Image (cartoon, rainbow, N blue to C red; front, side):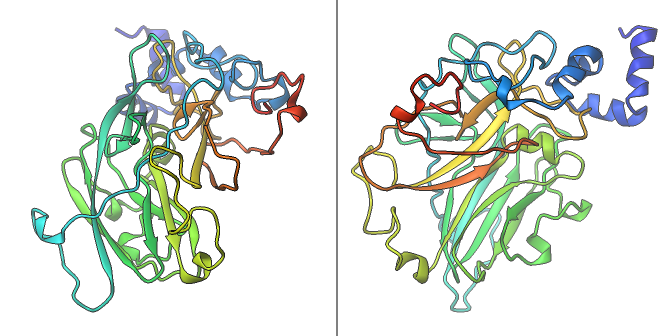
Amino acid sequence: MLSRRELIKLGLYGGSGGLLYLKRMSDGAYAWALDEDKRRRVERDHDDDERDDDGRGGPPGGPPGGSPPPPPAFTSTLPIPPVKQKKDPTTFSPAIEIYNDGVPTSYYELVETPGSVPLFPGMQPTVIWGFDGGTTTSSGIKTHLGPTFVANIGERVVIRIHNNLAPGVNSIVHHHGAHVGSDWDGSALWSQQIQPGTFKDFVYPNDDDIAATHWYHDHDIDFTGQNVFMGLEGMFLLHDAGELALNLPGNPIDQPPAGELPFDMPLVIQDRVFDANGQLAYNPFNFGGVIGDTFLVNGAIQPTARVAPRKYRFRILNGSNARFYQLALFTNAATAGCTKPLCR
């Protein structure tokens, strides 16, 4: 039972609004509200020059209890989320609208559902909310990122998205960067919500001007930060004839041998905060954005990738909540003596 002091303290964080957050959050909100000193430490600006060598950035902070030590840097394998496979439109139940207007159309089905991903050695897997509950690579590596959609300019894509998340967790899905009709744009409007236990059909015409690297993510009203923090994001890649003519790495005739990483490589960079049990700990009281102290690429903590001595194409997405990055490439010689985790 809450003490009188605790009730007063929670009330100072916004009265009924604070209690709404506490009802919604089962992954550390109560602890955040009742541990003001640590909350202030994690909310202040992080100095990137103060990163220590275990891959955790900025000054001490994080949720009560502290986050567990991450695996040694560059020992995890970089996961590449699989490309989403098309579905026969006649197999949907209930039936989906089938377009017969001559425009090439591809159909997909996606399910938002809880999942779990092993991130910290010797600990229980981290609970996530993911499109398809997260994905598993061809080599068996699990990541919280949703599958990657690949389409061509002029190819209509129809996606049925189910919300099988926890009761009370609504979702709005936004295709970020695309030209989309208002019914399927994923704007932060009540009318756009997918309620738990229901689904919505999205139509993406992909009539953009040029090929591009897009992504899709949750955009629920007031909870976009938390829902994306929990894992609801993925990549959406658009091609066109002009791009294919550039002979970039990973074009249709430039594919790697079986079991090797693709030459056209999506890289989603994120910083996250974990509690002492290795679970995601989003701070709902930090309205300026959450700065994490653990870095992930494609859902793995500071992974490494085995590549061939050739050109690769990197599609880099900042999937963090509030952090800015300055990225650079280094050779082994250039990093001799470097002690910072992001410059090796």
